[in-house]
Image (cartoon, rainbow, N blue to C red):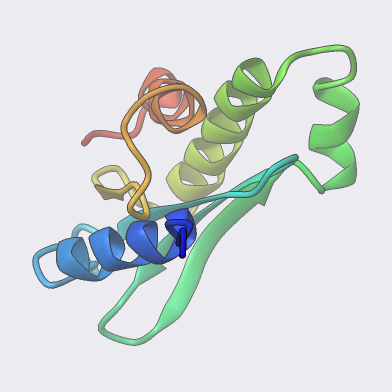
Length: 122
């Protein structure tokens, strides 16, 4: 019998392995990325108190207006800029990047580039 590999289960296993080492602190919170088929979500999280400091995604109305007519990579770049601006407004300048078990290419890489361009340090 042919068995099909569950790609999401493999991604989650990679993410759990990474999360043993990547921890968000108040000084350096975690920039966490989730990538669905059509959207991308980013959060800046302080794991010590378990709260989200800043967040942005392609489902928000103001970001949706900016990404009209753009491809998914360009949309991820805009989301990265938006989450960085919101984090900088809250006083966060340094983060640790949690790619969520995804490979650092495509939309995940563009989100990081947008956040770096807007001023986040990681």
